[in-house]
Image (cartoon, rainbow, N blue to C red; front, top):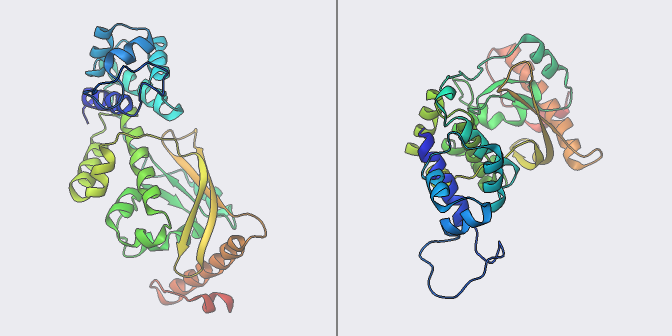
Length: 301
């Protein structure tokens, strides 16, 4: 991905989201030629010259101080994730940033042991490209629709945009799709010279109009905690909370763990899902092929 292009389009897209009224600037009527704020209005709010801000918005962030970037963030009303994205874009604009790092594709065995020990908690580990590098049995059961017919490492972005099963798995597919794109945009800001990430974004853009439209919006966000509803074909709707934990020993990897409110129908659903997963695993060990147990099969255990 092109760092200068990303800087230009990100700043222009944030500027277009604001109106003079939102930032307390007077309006004098007439037709405005641009959506949102003008460059000179942003420069005034940030306390920098129009010429300097114009150079920045054209992709020249190399050498910009943290104080200037903070001023630009305040002027554009950037949230925490957007502010961090701007800092990352500035950091990677310099020549010293062109060291490429490969995303981790596997984990230490001890991490898998931790995942396997999280009884009753669906959990998995994911890298910045949204490749699932490790998962426990309950996590695999929760996302069983994603693992059907899966012959290669599961990539969450490809599942959401290429696999029609994702439309039924998520009760709010649009939110899931928005989150995927925002996470990939944030990763691109951290390492715009990652060739494999560029290839992934190119593949998604070529094959999915939905992805391409969302990518053009240049939204970024943190995905640290929240709630989502999973519509599992065997146990029904599961309203789950999730939390993300970055693995300090392996930079770029994040563990996601899901839980349900104690005593809720979703907590009962997770227990049933665990029985369903155990039945499925037992059938695989017995028959050597993946089976599709029913809820009744799980309840017999």
